[in-house]
Length: 360
Image 1: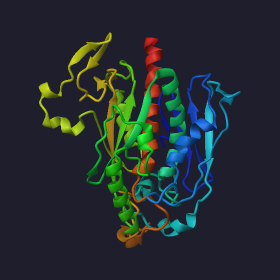
Image 2: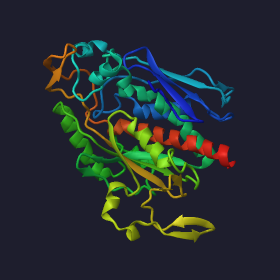
Image 3: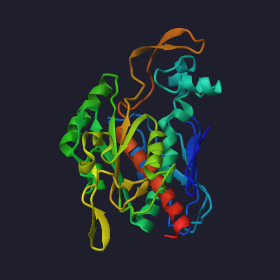
């Protein structure tokens, strides 16, 4: 299994949903960064279950502990290992899933590949694996903020057909965190919350779109061919549980425009090259151009619903299965810090690669 991500700033996550805990090893973090658990915990608190009525009621404090790589409050340049204990695992809620494949989950595909699976909450396929990503992403975000002047944000843009109006150039973290759905458009957020709660009460689920933003990225980060910046961002986002689509800048809407209308004209402003529009989403030719990077990630409705559905058992016989356990009716509010984390991990890796190759 591929459990590692990144090149110079590389992470490896470990642990299962209902095992002893989950965690991450970060290799390649530069030395002398002031770092403690207090820098990590806020993002884990935003990701944790049980934080509101529209997410899973599983009760986890997700308290992080740094085990290595820090001395006298600063990074050593050696591997940083972090772990979070699982405190509210209830594997008995999944006993029926031991012999039946949950529709649209990874149960059948894991057996098809490995011949064996952890059926307790999905094991490694559970979104609980992302605890390690978010913890590592918090370090990446701090490096980007303090050493590169880069700000990374994400927010809920759309829930099913309810779409928010948000300006990626001006949106603030305080606006995103002002409500439990993490949509900075307060009026639209209320409609989103009511829809998600309706789905929860009906034992169903709903999906939507998260928009990610990176401001302050200088021109020159990225690669021109296989490791294009948008390609690495796409891989990062599509590696998240429940993600099903990615587009950057104008994205799929760009096909409605002409080349003349879609081009971003260059101008000089205060001694810098800028563009008067940003349909490229801050990336051209796989390399950042100095403008704000923005993109969208589509997340499907949660696969576990509290209704009986057709499925197949481990003996390959037709049967039915009704969802049980504790699940999100919509992944979006808790996926916001996950999108931020993966964005930061891609950007810090490319920042280090650019410095190694070009000395900047």
